[in-house]
Image (cartoon, rainbow, N blue to C red):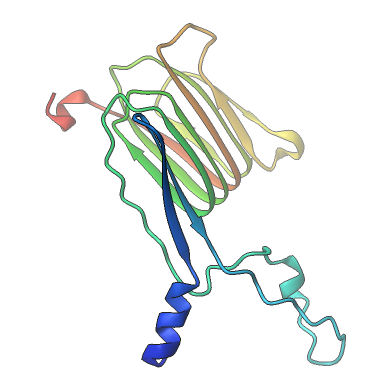
Length: 175
């Protein structure tokens, strides 16, 4: 639905994006969404129980998409609410978590990885050798590589959604 220019500007201004450089090697990017208006709990014939189950914050019909380029050896720590996270060709440790959505990693198949991935309600798919097991109540999956020492640790957690870990030949990246 289209909004008037003033209303659209106010709508966009309600989403706040901040960056904080903690050190020469650490950058924190955070997004603050406006609070959801409090639901009126007056049960009547028009009462909609759906708002009771919605998160406390809302995107206010605004979609934020980050494309971050980092050195290949960077360590990534990503804590994400709702949506997709994609990581391509990073050789440092990766820790990524999300509430709802999907996590997709594309890692060189020539690398050695200590992968621990778990989705509470969803699937975990990996091209790397490891073991997959169902989580409690058979609603989600957990995947882990063998207990061998590895230079790169990968810790992935998703509440509701899937995790995919693809092995990509190094020649795809040109080095």
